[in-house]
Length: 592
Image (cartoon, rainbow, N blue to C red; front, side, top):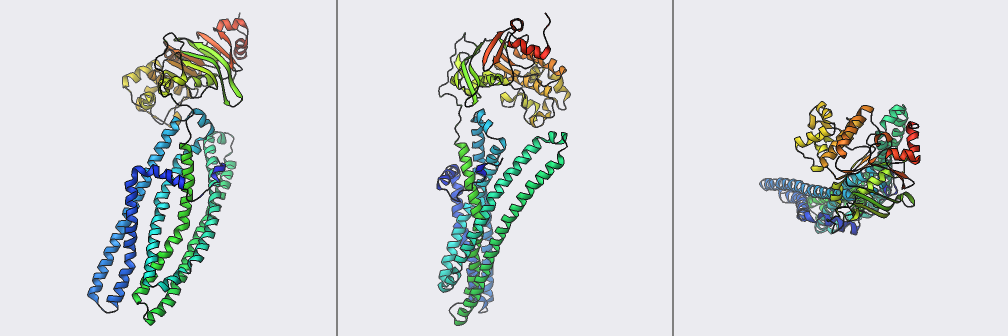
């Protein structure tokens, strides 16, 4: 899944993106204001500590005032307790803000994804979308907890330290500040090196994730062809490359810390030498020198952490760009502002009028395809692979938009239907029914918000020939279905999908290859269930196995994007055309 945008890092601050992040944060602006209030208060209490030490040394220790020293010690202790309380409050507020923003962003992203059309998911891998919802949103949360928000606190503290150092002794302060250019150059050098490593880490992590996703999904094939050793070696190589790059990044971070600590130590050495001389001449008190050294350590600490915060901000800006880019992706298929509610009484259940469609521009699947399906007509759709049979079912539910022509349901163009109403009216049972992790009850009643009357579910199971299946499972309707229904067979999943459709009860139903991958016993059950399911409703049955559709009211034969033949089984066999050739390829010549 390594993509070009995985390599882009961008700026550590983007005013446009920060403006959009503020819009997301606005509902929680009270927490933001509280954070901004806590920062200067925390900085003030933190900077009070060294000054209390100065007072204790100059006015109590050096003059032997032990009673006053006890008061100062108690005051210092209270100050530290207050400081810890403020830091806990500050951390809690920033974490709470970040978590709420993260919650809102993920909810907005998931809601937005549900509005996007099927073609969007054809072009965007699931792993990439998962990264947007999880990793990228988490990176934005990091900006609140240890990035930009923490940077504000550092700036406040640093400003306070500079002012206090100048007030205590401006000459000594200038000595300390003289080391800042060296520190800035070192920080810039290691930041550039760390940035390069960070880019490579993203690329290699993406490659490792892609390899893992593919290998885990294809584990059955790996085991079937005994490729465990080769796959383990490939994983070890990718993992080793990632480890080496992360180690190099850690080395640069550690080097920056070490350089800052060394410069800080050099600053303390200079202060001891120069400041000690001023103490001896009386230009500076001993307590002032101690306080000055304490403030100097607080001066270098935010600068030391600047590199890490820069990386956090950089990652947050890139993630924000991707998240808002996804949110800005407009759905290609939306319901009309004023959907049509009145429908012609005598109109066909489904009608295709000169429909053309291509998944990719110029690669036509349907070409001026036209046909009608009556209100209670059972129509079978057959043809060679790739002729657009499944596409017909998808266009009926408006999962895709037609390139030309019209698809009408009950005489109304599907583009004039309310999308929810259309998809309640037209149902689809795909070739691979999808079951969600949860209970059978939740899966069967999915069209009713996951809840359903037990008796209604039981009646649907009986009609779908699935009641014995459910009774055999531990827990019955409350039996647990694992991810994608892997603990059930293909035939069992089909029977449950038919029961789910009976509960959902659409007026028009499309079945896509319902018996294509099941055993003979399951096929008999599914056929019996389909007879019950298709009664009193219009239906489109898509099938490669022509034995399953001989009783259809009408058979449409698709070839090169159009309906080339139409009629009942016997009529089409008598014509000796495309349908007859398809039948003969499957079963041999039909007896006269």
